[in-house]
Length: 134
Ligand code: TYD
Image (cartoon, rainbow, N blue to C red):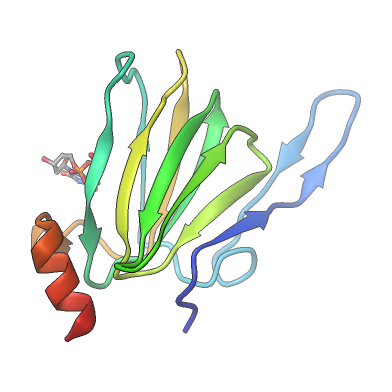
């Protein structure tokens, strides 16, 4: 099981008619895709996230525009700037996650390893720290 965040390059099929990139489960990303959602029309200065998941893994792509993803494993905090549609950020389970600095018209695509389950969320940072050290 993968447990480190990482930027994953996606195939880029260059074509004078326009480029194409692709993601297949278990191939470019280390999980089966159970759910897809996207974040868009984020007003200037707004932040998303501010939570961790106990089980869910994600892969985040800036399909359009740019934004930052701040990941925190309880020891270190790292900022990943996403601004191309041919790479994305793999986020393992048990990582605190925030997203900010959304550009105008940015579009964040998120692939998830589990269906939506409110019980999987850790919304409190101290609760998150307790969970990962358990
Ligand atoms: P949330 O995961 O907190 O968004 P973010 O991390 O981007 O800030 O979800 C925001 C709201 O949307 C919350 O009320 C739950 C709902 N939601 C769903 O119903 N299904 C989903 O798959 C997701 C991701 C969120």
